[in-house]
Image 1: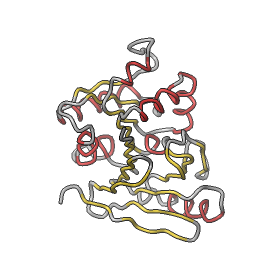
Image 2: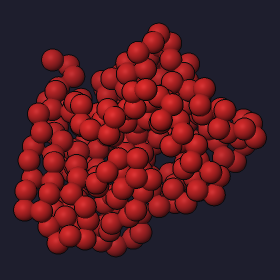
Image 3: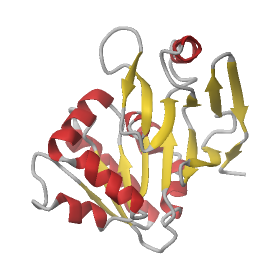
Image 4: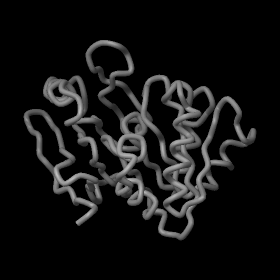
Length: 229
């Protein structure tokens, strides 16, 4: 069974409403027509608006969209509901609050099972952080900090690498000092596609957006395919 995760540093419908390249790339990985795509808006306190924006964007992409609310869940059997999806797309926001909510509802286990059953997992910012062992997060006010995540992918992740002035230096410092595991950083408009837990392809919705491999004393820009070319 092929296992896939697409982690976006930034972009997608919530940051680039006029640029569907990354979202279209995610949909294409389902490798079947009219795939079922479920949106998880659990990292934000404005989930209704976020979900409505998701429907507006993804109805244009030839999919069967749905979303999972944890205030009015569609069923008591959340495992069956999520295992029926072809793609699970996680939105951005507060990584710490989202993962705490998931653990309370058992979604951390359900998402792991979905991953190993072949459901494509994807997300932006918090929705990209969550799949790694660790992430760089601003979930708590103040300096960026390391947070432990679900660990489906080894190492760490940093989103918005070129989008927020302190993201890059803080991530480099944490990795250099050993406070955070080596890992990957993605610019806004860039994503890393992992297949069976190893990098498969880096893609971008902007010509200059890149993904980086970061380890102590080293930052290497990875070849990133501009999706419009």
